[in-house]
Length: 266
Image 1: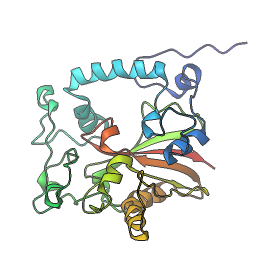
Image 2 (image 1 turned 60 degrees about the horizontal axis):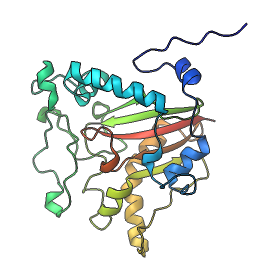
Image 3 (image 1 turned 30 degrees about the vertical axis):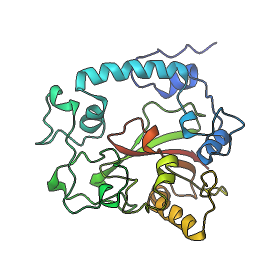
Image 4 (image 1 turned 135 degrees about the vertical axis):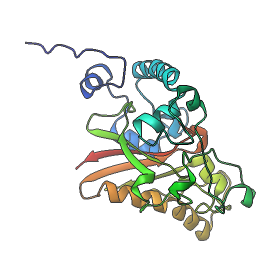
């Protein structure tokens, strides 16, 4: 007796829909290779932008985004106010028209890109001053500034691998922890790493660069807080993980700092 196909919805897909309608395009090894940017022979370019949803799911996602944005005044507003539960606030009321441009508040005295003569990153702080936010993301950040959610629209990966996103109200890539000496590199590559396996995230060199040990250490330091956060939340004795934080040029939701975690139970 054959199993009937699950009903095909229009919102975020169920696990049953993903398994039946959206066969994985990427193996677990391919996901790890792509995070490590080791698989140039498999893709037109070795770039995290090649990790994506199944094409049929992407069509469904694009339609859902358009409809959701129309209701909530923007997809960032939906994420902030509905999915993450971080609003509305006094400065971000609940009327749809007000959601088009969520309020982002910097805290006086914080280090910023202009101070160091660096490019200004996208705003990543849907905050009010009363929250007294930290300057940047750390592994031990107060829980009110971070939330881990399963990706409602996961990339095309095996069902044994779970796709999570950690969202934060403060910047992950920030001049206070990314030295000006390596800012362009992190701006190009983002952050990435592995836990629970023998794979090591070696710092990558830009073409023509010769790195000193000091430079390599600065790259490692830029990754440190995100890496420890992943270790704390996906213990390596239980999980094998590949994670990354997209550089600004690849962020699908540039108004909210976030990192992707691909985790497979051991």
